[in-house]
Amino acid sequence: MNLKDRARQLLKEFKGETYAFGGNVIGAVGIYAASFGKRALVVSNTGSFPDFVQQVVQSVKSNGVELAGGQVFKAARPNAPKEDVLRIRDYILNHQPDSILAIGGGSVIDAVKAANVLAALGSIQPDIDYYFGTGLVTKVLEESNQQLVPLIAVQTASSSAAHLTKYSNITDFLSGQKKLIVDEAIVPHRAVFDYGVTTSMSSDLTIDGALDGMSHCLEVFYNANDDQFEKVRDITETALDLIIGNLKPAVEEPGNIEFREALGLGTDLGGYAIMIGGTNGAHLTSFSLVDLTSHGRACGLLNPYYTVFFAPAIEEQLKVIGEIFAKHGYIKEPIGNLAGRHLGEAVARGMFAFSESVNSPTRLMDLPGFHAGFIERALAAAKDPQLDMKLKNMPVPLDSQSIDEYMGPILWAAKTGDLSQIKNMEV
Image (cartoon, rainbow, N blue to C red):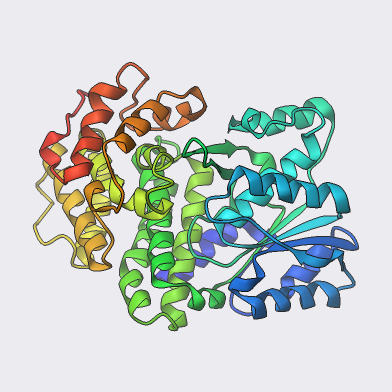
């Protein structure tokens, strides 16, 4: 079985009939919407892909579903600002739809997920900050006997897999900090992703998305327990092979649907991975760099450094990952006899080479506007109890008392690219 067929098989196993993906699947949107009722609230940034949005609207209307409010409503800006969440909440409350269609990338879908929560539960707990963490939406839904409006997520970017997952990343730009809702209740009821729409993605967005999807797989695989290990390994091997082998060609030939399909399948598998396990170090730190660089680039930049820190605890995973980077020419040295930190550094160098092949930065100091205050902010944020899940998901867990001693050197190493600064903890 080839890589793409294996990816399709895994995604069918994951989502069954609730997810339409591949080519020429827009017709599924209207069918899904009609199954929930006669009025759908459509939220999208129409200027990004007007023809595609019109195709989605036509699919809805042709299935006997009207647009609540008679129009397509403005969606969220990048990184899903809290203010945009509140605005979308008001659309839902004002128009009382039978379903919601979120058309866009991860930020759009994340914002609509959070807005849907506030629309349903705002009279009980109106502060979005209350829901940051794990399982709090479900808790309030059960206590109040309320329900969310069915959400249909129409993805337009190969990246976060927000259309498939229980995560909603929301940003408070006043503090420069991103936080996370993690809850099964916010998984979209249905999802659609026509990979052909991604041919319009810019090279920057293509790289950001690929690095995000790759990071999902890496971080979950690093901390996979015995029961999860073989399944996560299968997902990770398939996804990384697709992403690492097709990102550079997709950047060079953006209109090539074969490369775009590979990235779509690979990043979707990243969504499967994070529904099995959680992300950890790189994602945690990326939340503090939201006003410095994109989420995907932040994760891609940071993962090599966390890899070296985790290395003594994840040798089996690193052998698997290292072979994929070697297969595509990013690791030149034999890694079969390497172990521990030496193995971690070899894989980290492969990650650097991969990022450099698409001109993505590998050091914090290369990001315009970077200063030491970002490291201090990241270390302080890591001690926030609302982000504690990321510390616990690390294969070498940290707590608030050990952050400065061990995470500090990781981030200072990431500033300069000097791996020797990283301290390993005994495991």
